[in-house]
Amino acid sequence: MEKQPPEFIEVDGVSIALRRQRGDAPGLVWLGGYRSDMLGTKAERLADWANETGHAFLRHDYSGHGESGGEFREGTISRWLKQSLAVFEACTSGPQILVGSSMGAWIALRMVQELGRSTENRRIAGMVLIAPAPDFTIELMEPKLTAGQKRALLEQGWFEEPSDYGPEPNVYTRALIEDGRLNRVLDGVIETHCPVTILQGMKDPDVPYTHAQKLVEHLPADDVTLSLIRDGDHRLSRPEDLDLMIRAVEEMVRRIA
Image (cartoon, rainbow, N blue to C red; front, top):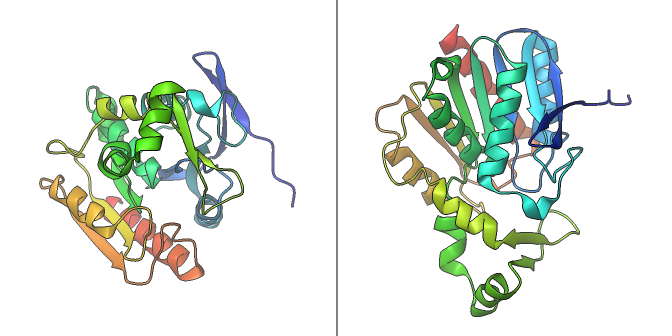
């Protein structure tokens, strides 16, 4: 069946594509990873679940991703965070569960911090974080940069490396890395004021499971569950992984209701 075309909202002159299913609260808000889009396997599975259960579901593409406008190389955590907040505020009402994958989990954690500055923070009723990669530019990338990559960042402002997830190489910019330092969350206590469930593969080649354990240490005041999948990779998109994600969402919904 052909997909319905997305809706668009403009954020700082860039058209941000989104898809939403109206329904009951709590709604789900999907936040994808670096270089992923809102039509990926996990987002589609959540859309099916929302359709089957009658819950609201919202997803969007960051600038430079999927069906949104803008140049990928101009993207930063701050820019994608601002777009995510704009979509959230324009297209949701009532309590919401943020479901963030990889970089999307970093965006989700920053959203909670930013929304915490207003009455909107109470609308985040729960979080499900999948292979979370908060602070990945600082914690996971910078310590491993080669001399050649550092030189490329300094001289041309970016470097690229082959991707395990598609034919196009991954591109990392100096702006992304410098901006990442301004969006750190693993430098103090993260106050989410809601239950958090983390799903993490122990065979993840991109985000080691110790990174998820470190995140838990920064969530001491909240109700946190960490599930380690012994043979899970970074994508966590196998049928059994998707079933686990849905069970985590269903459990979160029951706790909130």
